[in-house]
Length: 266
Image (tube, rainbow, N blue to C red; front, side, top):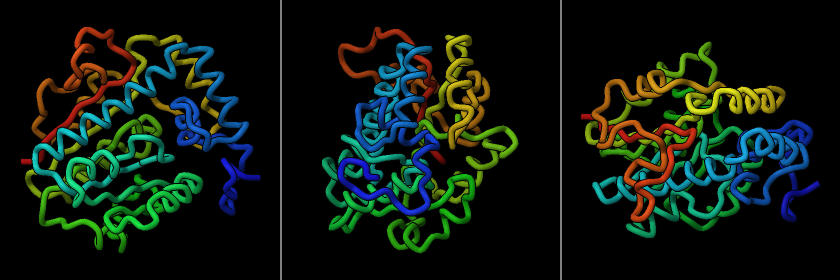
């Protein structure tokens, strides 16, 4: 079996959906299997705005990366990067500054395999197959250390990943470990799904994802905001994703189900 003509990496159970591939489907990508599409259709059935929310989150990533580059960040660590699609971090950053360096991190074998394909020949971008919940594994990876200079500011991206991490794994402590490693001047972008605005629909999304590789754990505003502890929030703080540095013509858009923000380590 293959995805868009490519062989499925060894060890991938195509019957078990994954968040990275469901997200790919929601964004209109083709690197997903029947099991992922089935879950994606369930998500859209209970949350008709599902595709819009996914696109909104992706747009936040784009704006956050551009903000970081415009403020002097030239190296990025993208945790839980997922399956590359149009508007990847290295494309956004290197369009503004070709010297920008990017390390992608994911444990989804399809995401990693496809990342390696599209990064072939790009000396300033690489992918690490690792679990973001194991900061030491990520931070001490040879690829990470070779690509990033931890004596200079880094752009840390944790976009749409922590709602897949249960409280039992202590997500705030995971964020803190990465934050502690960053040098002063680094910027951290984080977004997180919430059930604050549509609790019934999000409960149904949780049900749809419960048997996937990545069950979901939505959090209220206060818990998402707490993930930025130890950082100086960039204005306007933690807000609905479309409202963070909203693009012209989108400043009056309705809030959606993603909280997002960027913080600076001083």
